[in-house]
Image 1 (cartoon, rainbow, N blue to C red):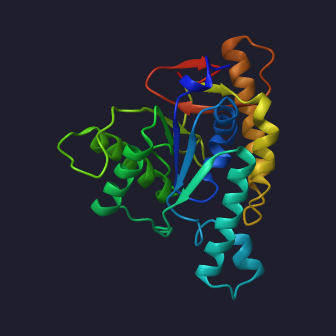
Image 2 (spheres, rainbow, N blue to C red):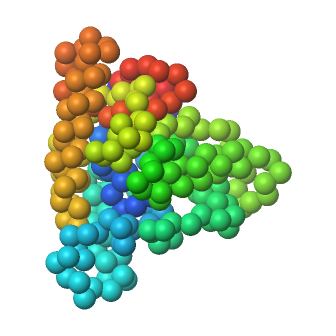
Length: 247
């Protein structure tokens, strides 16, 4: 457990699309929220064009705005299950573009929330450019948020502890994602599955990330020698370690 809710780290997750935060780090986010940490998700898009295939196939006459509304409702329901706050920037997906104005909006999100920990996408996702553009933008936003000469409505913050969550599956190896930090989410994995069930537009997510949760759990057991770990989520950070809580 964390030392106390009063000292619990502030956790901010940046998600390229409506479901990414849940599929890749839902167990970790729920774990921090349950322990008393302020946890917020910022979704850059709803995934309305590229990640809502079931909706478009079932109802080809839907408008983009209608799909956005459906995806927003799904994502809000998922966030409620996890017990986290969520914001939507509605920047449009496939393709997602992040210029200077949007980059500075991300700086504002970081400075307003003042996170200790930031989670976002892996930097290499060749089959989903939205993901890697998001990752690079968050790295730059963290840097700009720290710069005293970048005059914005909120004061500069120190660099948060930045972690990259799971790459797009099942292309993990293709994207070169090799986690060096594993978080035990055994106690919150069922909650993550319940949250993923809210995404009716992406029904494959539960099966994919159940498998990856088990796989990462097996790896974490192997690295740590802890037989009690059944499910885990993998992250990349600068120094490899296996922990109960992100340091």
